[in-house]
Length: 227
Ligand SMILES: C[S@@+](CC[C@H](N)C(=O)[O-])C[C@H]1O[C@@H](n2cnc3c(N)ncnc32)[C@H](O)[C@@H]1O
Image (cartoon, rainbow, N blue to C red; front, side, top):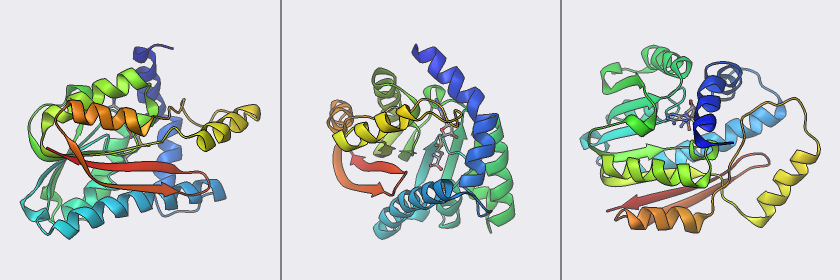
């Protein structure tokens, strides 16, 4: 499968069955046990980023780019906390849902702007660029290109999360592949932490904070890198 295929597949998925699945997971309604576990894991990742940024005490002064924003799970609370957020996603359905959620919940919806845009074509300059749980959809070379592009947009800080490539997770994935149910998701790519750190370092960043969220079905390594 080449990278153009990956991107087209991901876009089509998140405008169709993927949208239905993930907007439920990233919501408050009833879901099955696996989805609930993923919801809780993802919320932990979001909460970690929020706690890091709030601890710095300067959110109101920050411009933030949330690349691959999904339904706005991070963008909306960041905007509520006073940051100026530019949030974008390749999926029009995701952006429509995020815009509605922002309208329904934000006391100051003007703090966030949403756009349908693949992150490879984003331009501009932001204090902080964040990209959560997007790299899982892309193979290593493509992920490297994406991070390198995001780095050009980040004046000071880049925050990324990805599914780490560890022996235990590789085994888990293999076991999952032995019992393939109806396909519920796109292909998932794990990334070696050392590879991601190298890409960040090659772009002039160094790691400041890191965290790991592990639940039964959700695994996400979070890195904060600054210039
Ligand atoms: C698993 S969701 C994570 C959403 C959000 N970052 C969060 O953590 O709540 C992955 C999102 O990445 C988006 N996406 C995938 N490839 C993308 C790309 N090349 N550019 C922008 N968004 C992309 C998908 O449409 C989807 O909304």
